[in-house]
Image 1 (cartoon, helix red, strand yellow):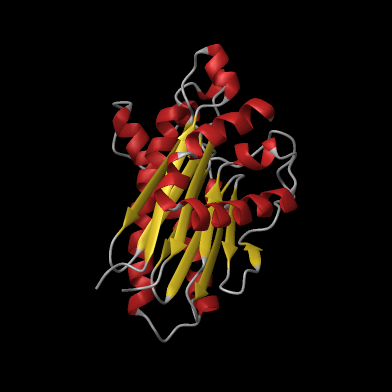
Image 2 (cartoon, helix red, strand yellow):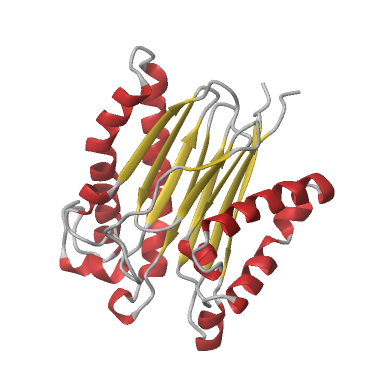
Length: 267
């Protein structure tokens, strides 16, 4: 059976990073099979306090994809529970698992230990992380920190999976490098009664370059959908890095990362 979806992820180094000759601090990972598709993006903080956040963001998407895939399999196996029941269980466990495994990965990389608890050295690797795990019947979403996940339904209506977090303001964001960060993690579980039309997930560089405007962000999703229709998937994805770079140049100069998933008809 052919997979009914296609997906891609693209990161672009921000204009400020290019000017200062510093690396892109964002990361993205996409895993696709016939049974599920997993997407994750992460935004390393990038300042001197978080000197190695480019590595931290890469670790974040690797860990998030693996754990989200495992969580989706558990949901698929337990058909008796409602989405709300799954959500309640995952809300108490998913953030802890991702945080613990990210901590371990950083600690091992630093040569400290394989301990998954918090240590001061983790601060240098600080990053946000967003992830989605989707099958034909279920969709799971996870977010720690800023960024956006926008879902487009078959009727063309759009939905931000997570609303604005009132605890975050200015440049402050929740991070994997903070102790007890799991209490700020957001989890959503949806049973799919019809296929998702499109999913757009991004680090905050995109919406910040759009002056934080949710309507403009939704217009980007509409524009991309139309572009795929007119120019094709490969051409659209191939042009994303240049578009993200130009958006950063005209906007706030930050790194930008976009993961895009589109449901296609099974043949």
